[in-house]
Image: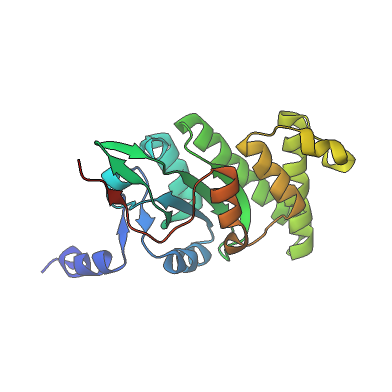
Length: 58
Length: 164
């Protein structure tokens, strides 16, 4: 079994997706903040009307 | 959201930021047309302190320019403050005051009663807000930004699709 196959479910559970953009988004702001701190990066938070996951509703 | 689909924006943002999203409002869909709705992009420190806000949708060039400004301003703030939070806030305050003066012809050092008659666009309002309250936390300003700057009601309601 390839390691990627084992990790695949974990990558989904972490809630990361690009949602049709060129950027990977964390679905939970708290997790994103932890990740930013860990990676020494800043945090980009989009506040949207509607559901970001569905382009029709954003 | 279209600016975020741009490859150059995606590359730069991914290198310097960890990204997330939050639904803070809603809109209606009537006759297949979207009514209302907006977006605010908060560039923050990892502990949710606001370095900058892009209020409303912008094109890729603007998003890239603002993201670069944030990243470089933050680096300079770190360099100049040597880890002192108050020093960092003061640097960010001065950076916003400088943009307010250069791009919106408003000098915060000379603010007086005439301010009430000045018509600032949303980005001018952002710079004024963050010149007055640098590194404020997101939860302290997001209602102001969405309701007063963008004219949208903050809401936990789901998107409503009106029946034909």
